[in-house]
Amino acid sequence: MEKVMEKQKRIALIAHDHLKDDLVKWCVENKEELKRHFLSGTGTTSRLIAEATGLPVKSYKSGPLGGDQQIGARIAEGEIDMMIFFWDPLEAQPHDPDIKALLRIAVVYDIPVATNRATADFLMNSRFMNREYKHTLQDFQALTEKRAETMRKEFA
Image 1 (cartoon, rainbow, N blue to C red):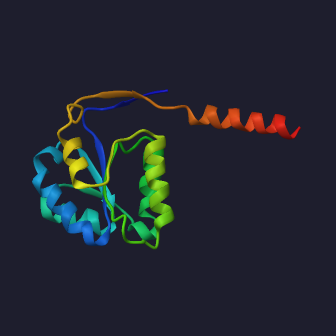
Image 2: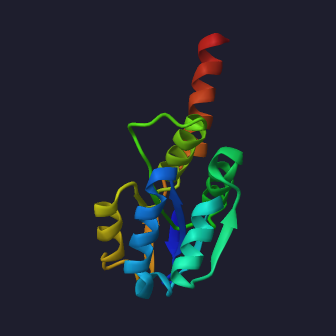
C-alpha cells in the first residue's frame, strides 16, 4: 500500500520529564523549520514548546495518562507523519508498555522517528522535510490473515 506524506508534515513532539528542557531548546533552535508544519505533543511537553516558541501545538494527554496511546492512534489513523521523542532508555517509566507500543506502531506505519537530538537534527535537515514523500507500507493486515490461515490449517 502506498502512502504519501504531504509537503507540510504533522509532527508529534514528546519528551520524558528530565528531557523536556532539551526538547524545548531543540524546538526553539528549529523554530523556523517547525513553523512550516503542524505540531502536536503530549501534556506538559506541548505546553512548554508552545510557550517557548510561540507556535501552535495541539496537546494530547500526558504520556502516563494516555497521551502516548492517543499519539499512537493518530499514527495508525494516518494523522501523524513523524515523531520526535526524546526518551530516556536508562530510566524506567511507569508507562513503559505504552512507550513500547507507541514506538512499535510508528514502525508498523513507517513514519520517521527521532529518539535523540542527533536523529532529530538529521530529520529536520532531510531533503524530504519540505516536500511530498511517497513510500510503501508493508501490508500487515494481509500478513496477519496469512498467519491466521496457516494456524487454522495446522490445528484443523
